[in-house]
Image 1: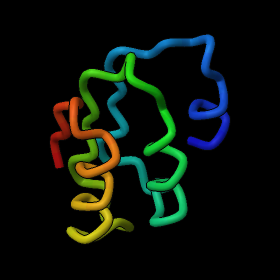
Image 2: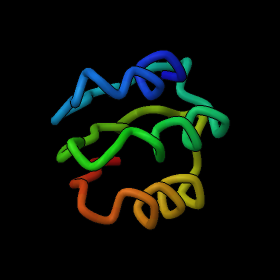
Image 3: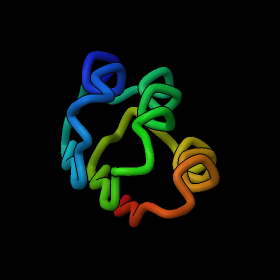
Image 4: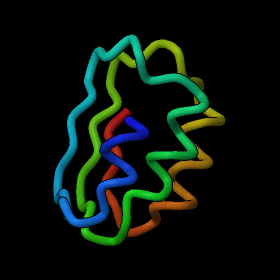
Length: 68
């Protein structure tokens, strides 16, 4: 996640991490820095992050559709 977030030149529009056990609360801060090109983010079944992490991410990426 950190590597993807730091690669600004990728300009990802949609990222699905559904079911990824490696997505942790620390990952959320990296995801929040993905940039404004990100339009959709799927975090379903990422059991290591809680609702408060999702809420924080929704504030950071207010333009992005987040599925959790």
